[in-house]
Image 1 (cartoon, one colour):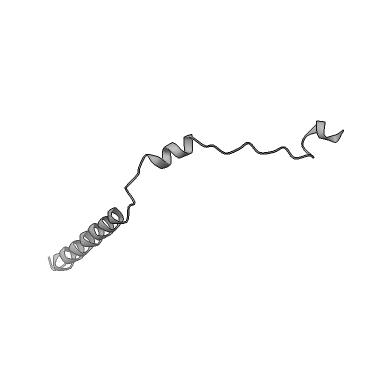
Image 2 (cartoon, rainbow, N blue to C red):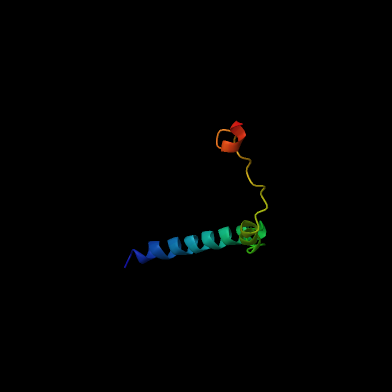
Length: 61
């Protein structure tokens, strides 16, 4: 029964730490744009890579 005197304060400290980290992440903008990165991956506009002369058989002429 004495362990409860240790577990209750530890659980309160743990909950306070979790709430603090969550509030910090919300204030710093971690949850501002949840769909943007997912759409950016699908709409990739990178230019195609140029062929290397050693890989292109028509470049050997």
